[in-house]
Image (tube, rainbow, N blue to C red):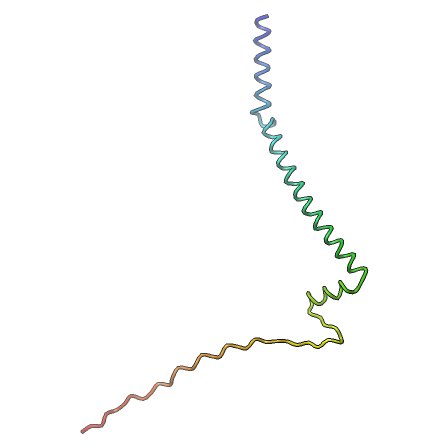
Length: 110
């Protein structure tokens, strides 16, 4: 009976080692849990993006207002009854040219 308890205790210790310390134990489960949480967050972000894109496609298919807005913002298009004004900022005045080299002054000989 003494040997049986010793073998049973050793078996329990080996199994506990595999659960807590071994590579495929609790550590791996925690790493996988974190990876699943990160993947779910990424999936949620992508689902939101897909919803936005689907709404944009729906708007483009249903009416011309969204199409017109996109053409204005991305292509710079204007309507036929509009007047286009382009405002150009004034260029900076060119720096004054350096003065021409002056001839040296000569003194009259006495």
